[in-house]
Image (cartoon, helix red, strand yellow):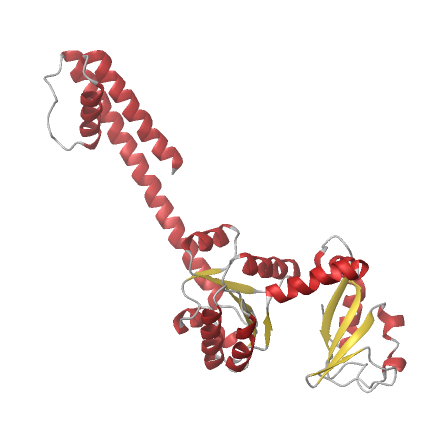
Length: 323
């Protein structure tokens, strides 16, 4: 597109300079003549042309017509390519299942999608701002441009087959509407929402959000910990935010067919078999931190573990799932 604009600008400059030099016209008259010649509007000459001027005008007309055809071809190609890309994206979105819907691609949404990309988790972005939506498409993300509070937009994002929704908009009221709409369309979907104001947390939970995160509260606590317990902060940074470091905290669901089911933590020998360390167990919605050696594993429990990528893969295999 910039190339096309540049070509037209060059023609305007050449035409204007040509009429100034050949016909000795004023700059404005020469520019006006160039414009009406290139656009073929048929206003007629500014003044009678000399033979040299007529030849130059014919050159400008031919060059202008060729350039216009070239520009139109580029525009048609761009339009067709854009429509094809949108159709391809819609087709991919329509096939999504067990995915996550990220509402808002601001700073919060971008951090979420970066994490999903690293973890290879399927997701679709809903963004109302055309500029941000275009940037997300340029980043080769699946994007729906529209208002995430709209039921139609959520349905386009396959909310009925989604595993979760992330409400990352800076407006608490908009996030509350998204939570209500999402829960109405899919009562089983898990929703995590951002809350700009601490007073909005309880409302978002009542609306159906499973978890509400306040960036300001987290930032304040983190800054306080960084001052009083710097080594703890450094450790968490390494584990949670350093892709090059191999240590990870992850959660693994325990399959009913797993060999770990029915065994105690002590007898399961998870550390010896996988190398991963069990930090907590989610049992029927109750989080048991630092489980005791006599804890008996049951199918459907979630294990929160610390280990390398390879160790967590071994744990997932023990749990009955491929990671």
